[in-house]
Image 1 (cartoon, rainbow, N blue to C red):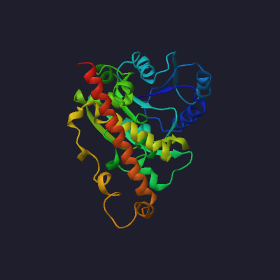
Image 2 (spheres, rainbow, N blue to C red):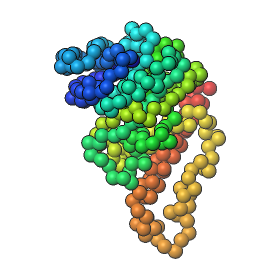
Image 3 (spheres, rainbow, N blue to C red):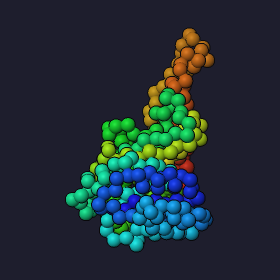
Image 4 (spheres, one colour):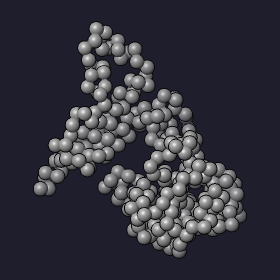
Length: 299
């Protein structure tokens, strides 16, 4: 088993991550941690020297600042083994590595794994806001809450399967608005690989306060709407029924009570929920309009 981390100029976070790995129970199958620094070269290589007595480490450097390229650079040098993909801003549970090792003991390829993600908040958001945050900013509390695809900071696959799927697509975010890891998991499933969720493989993801604010949630809502089904659907298929019903009449239907009083009477979670879904659908509409214009301009 290999742990693979791409990093760029975040030594304080990386030190925390490596400390947590060093405190893990290391299974017999554990080989090393590969850290790939990409972009402007900093002090990452010298940082790793702090851990030479604690962990088997391998440093790599890629001058192009792109996570997908950094992962591909490291993978190209590896023979088949299980690689645990994670980030430089996480901390590991003591038994995370042993959980992966135990579950993958009899496999060599044909399956990929994903673990549970909890959150270390710089400043915890109010409870009403959490449902509107992305999974990487609110975490998973139970297996039934896991998303369709595992988060990029806590999943594992075999090198041969990754290579057979074509390695990571550095342009996946630009072309499809999905992270490299999500794009890869989609392609692995298209290749017929099975997915196995490991509830006891736990990683805590650090979330700064600016990524769990109402404004951040609305920005993400617009982006998610814009890149949602808009790239797959023609404008002439658009139907107002795709909007939530309340967007048509809930606040503006005939009612003896003034609109402003109806708004004030709602709690802020409901108010924000309406703003959130309006933003999501506005992004959806804009994405479809731009897609239609692009399609028409290209014949």
